[in-house]
Image 1 (spheres, one colour):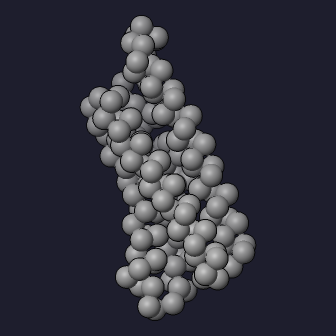
Image 2 (cartoon, rainbow, N blue to C red):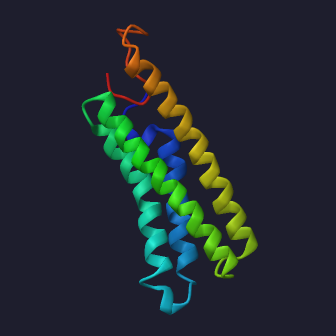
Length: 136
């Protein structure tokens, strides 16, 4: 049973990716401090933050909206990680680990969003139960 957003596997995974991004961007060129470094960090922080915020909202619709923001930030981060790889700011193993994690978070969020949408659009499905990842 979920006690709070920290129990969500998608939040845990996205939080770990955020830590990886912060560690990796420490080594970026100094002239990227306000460019790619800042953009990647903001996108990375946005994913677990929006998951947490949505979980704490009072309606499934609000939760879905926050998850969609998180999903968009995850896609933004994927693009930025690819750019960092192509600019040779990331080592191939760093890129591989980040890219794999980002895709995993994407799959997890897609699944959670679809599940919540099904229940949100058809309230007769499990009327007395709560959507996965929401509070009772």
